[in-house]
Length: 247
Image (tube, rainbow, N blue to C red; front, side):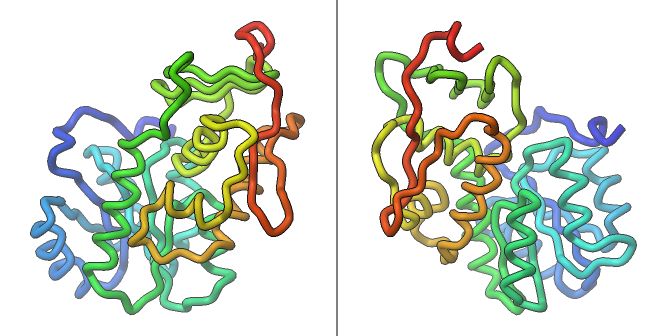
């Protein structure tokens, strides 16, 4: 039923962002600030109101407070993430590392502790929106589809099949897999991955990369194709294949 909440089709030139935060004083100044950067910010103070807005409108990203009435931001993130790969930024007033880890494990694309500067929030949102539009370069021989033994990645459709079965990945998980798959065998450090996927302006801690890799590995099981090189980084270690091999 939640799948009916989301639709597509608005002009991408003016990104629409939904803020769900019960602080009534937060939305008005942020709405004005986002408008300076050609972004439309809509807001809701309760999760139910936010889900209703998602049902009736098309949004490019969501910003969720952790401390909310009705359900916390983690539960709300889980509901949204179960049906749509809309980029999500989590806000937390507690600032604990565990809060941020939980948010990222649930599929949030980024986090920002309160209090924050509006410019930093805009930068985080711009980064994840830009990452949604920009795909890692693929080998010229097969620019649209990368095929390995038991694994197929369709870069245009942003779809991944494991042993012929489609698996659902968040935007961050897909971009990480596409990045590694574009240059199999190359070792990417955590800093390399953060810079390539999130942009240099996003001040994220490298633990986030480990979390995303862990999530991706679980979804790719029983394939064991992402290898960790101690003190070096991660690499995709899987044999090249044919479309039949990936099925």
